[in-house]
Amino acid sequence: MDSIVINSEGDLKSVNYKLVPNEMATEKAGAETYVGCVEVKETYGLQDIADQMVKEGCAVKGSTVRLVLSEFADLVADLVASGRAVNIGGLVRFAPAVRGTFASETAAWDPAKNKVVVNASVGSRLRSAAASSAVRRLNTVTLPTLEGVFDLAANLPGQITSEGTFLVTGTKLEWDEEAEDEGFFLVYGGNEIRCPSLIEEANPARAVLHNPQEFPDAGAELSLVFRTRMGGETLYQVVYAGELQTAVAQA
View (cartoon, rainbow, N blue to C red):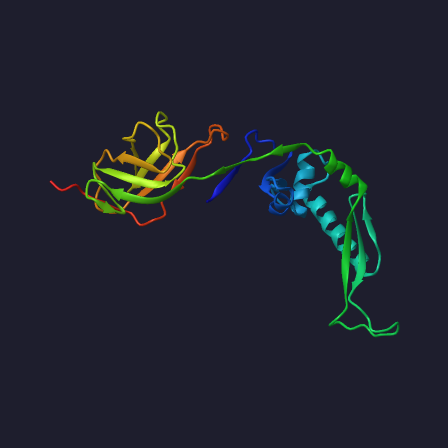
């Protein structure tokens, strides 16, 4: 099943993580165990860093900052390539290293077996910053699935009749029937029709709905719009992926 990750408090300054099952630890401990998996918000490049510095009050123009950062990155690469270690302000230390084996003390360099790589180690400044990070656990919500549509008026699968009744099968078919912006909607030709439920007690595996309007025999899109208990006022939408036909009711 598909799922969405919700940060219910929207804390953009925190390290956001979700919990995922740790199958190996669970098997060993004999009880279900979870590990934290960080959800990285985005990756910053040099231009992003320059823009952020200006946004936070740097007196130098963004274009100048970008140029300096670019030249700095080139210099670090050149220094490491020339056999030097570089410590960047306690954030990270880069140093060249050699990989591969040699047959003897006097063996020649073999590009097929040997290569120069870069080792990177996190500095104390960055370790301290990470250790004091605010953290926020994200809530993972499994999305509903719309598996099938059955026209009860015409007794046909994959079809909905004008002003007819139809059945939707799936999982987690849950919404607030009292909320006008939640529920099942039919979209066709720029029009959007909300189809009210005909079942008083909610059933997460099936929904019986009524199409209150006529529409041409031209096809339509069916979707379920809903809010989650943990997602606040945010609306989510799941669209039926199967082929769906529309039909005009026979007189």
